[in-house]
Length: 314
Image 1 (cartoon, helix red, strand yellow):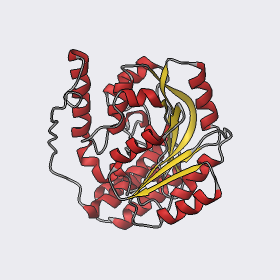
Image 2 (image 1 turned 180 degrees about the horizontal axis):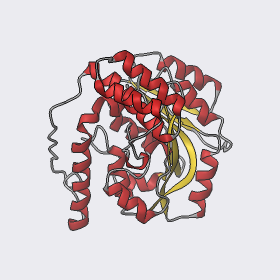
Image 3 (image 1 turned 60 degrees about the vertical axis):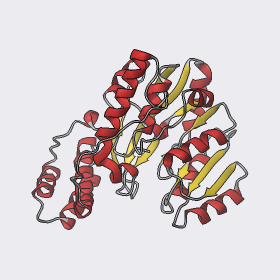
Image 4 (image 1 turned 45 degrees about the vertical axis):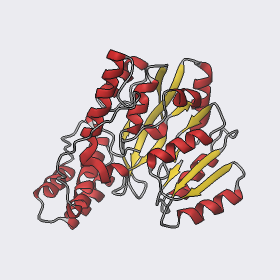
């Protein structure tokens, strides 16, 4: 579990791991120079449970944190977890059983239920279960949710771990390389509550997602055609980003508007009403907020949940 400024959520995230029905594990946490109360909370947690291994250090970024976690892990199977999510109690039991039953599997995810800051449900997402369908989905940008995944540690190391310069999409880059050496799958059960909130990495870097995704897919095509890509050959990768279209004042109301639409499509009208009202409170002059509010009142969704990309990456 990498942690950076997640004091509001990190204790609940850790407890969801420490209370798993599967007990034979270690929870490795790297705090990446948090400026809030996260380090103190994590130190208190580490004193109460010997399974917690905690590293506190200066900020180095998400890629460095993920690779450090990969190097610190001692078990052959590693399960990833974000510091604002919640693993459901049987997650590790079910994933370990499936990984042990199928040696060809190098990475195993699951379905998720997305929740908001308060823990209220937004929608459920069940991903394709078999390798070929996941391959198609990944080439379109999304077919697994990273913090649901368990993978074989050595396979992740052998393909090169996590790579710069991907501030988001580092999971997609790894999935595509793992797919070249083994099988990927998703369990149909919901094993993770995946939290959406404005401070998630994707919320801060959403404008760049298309650039990251297209670069990652081009590298995968290079490997298919030539056996290696530019990063593997030590060559530079240039990223060109479009001008940001999202100003800070608009981001909050737009997040709530989107969550209202998603919750409505996901069958959670109470969550939809909450976020529609908040969007209107923050931006009463925005026509988009009134349109979302009208859809919530009428109970008519214009969204297809299966078409939504992952909103929080990394």
